Length: 478
Ligand code: NAD
Image (cartoon, rainbow, N blue to C red):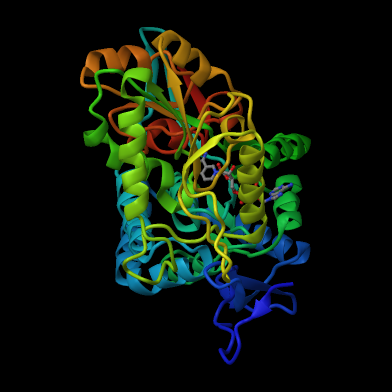
């Protein structure tokens, strides 16, 4: 049980959103500030009866919501983007309090969510003419699925809610949104904003634990689950959704490789490679998690990355100077410490970091390791923390093979001064997205999702929007 912050009253100004009403509950979730390790807020938690009420409200609201036009729905999503920007400061502070990330990155998460929402609500979903001849006219329409359940993790609760939420609403579905029990607060505040904009019942937001997520996947009147989280939970979600043959989109973990080619300039790329590895203290599904460097630049890149690490201030996300906040929760903090201990035992070389400060909060300094075996935990697992291995190669085909030698397949990147060569190598990475000379660049207009066990389906773009809809053929004889 975590300590409570002394002499500071708990924040309790949070409510569930069910059927257009903001509700309290007898059951409460306590929320820890990971920069202190102390409980700072408490919010209501929903049970399965609350879920049933939310689903009934969503179903009822869907009947009329599904008949509104794209432009009507886009107008309301536009109002949501305005509300997000108007409330950006308060939301960002709350997000940093519960998640830990630096305040500037929290503000950017909200701004980005607003921009991506506007982007998605501008995508046209056309009726496709399949055959048009003398005998028949055959069209492919897309109609909303119904009630969509959205389950999110704790690393980017706003952005990872808004992607599926806007996709589902824009395509005419109603929703039930459940954030992670570690980070429910900003999502509940988002619910209040949504409630001022959308008709009652179209959006429902319920906080709760893993069992509430499981109940959503099993619920007979939810038509689709959009899940973002770990591979292990994703497999459970897919299995328990099978009982009702729900549509499922899974955005899961990654172990993203970056391949640095011999013609890259270590000093020029170090800042970008460092940020893509350590942003949000490595707690990003598509962060760089393995760096493969050609032997000719190995020493130069290592020292350039160590320089970056030395400049990255670790501390509370509320301090504007902070570059790396704490790990989000004790479980993840312990897991990353175990990986560091395992890496130490293996005899690896620590270029920087590796020592855990003896102070409150879940802080781990940026840690770069070399001389690690490809099968060691720090290379083979999704570490999801600020510890990254740098691995040397001499033959690029060997680097590609090692990069692909994993059941993960979220994304990856190639770094080179020759973009055409970069493209040719990017095309060989077994991932949903391969970047050249960048990493982590996403857009509302570009599908995102994982290959292999990193995902199932895609979010964003027309491809993602269609996954919230049922293809429906209309075939007319002439
Ligand atoms: P998690 O899988 O433990 O939990 C995610 C959510 O699922 C939480 O809301 C949780 O309450 C719920 N849940 C847990 N058990 C459930 C069950 N049996 N049925 C339904 N719901 C259940 O993940 P996490 O630790 O919160 O998040 C970290 C993981 O998320 C990392 O692996 C990360 O890579 C991944 N992630 C992926 C993406 C992506 O877009 N691919 C983005 C961000 C995070």
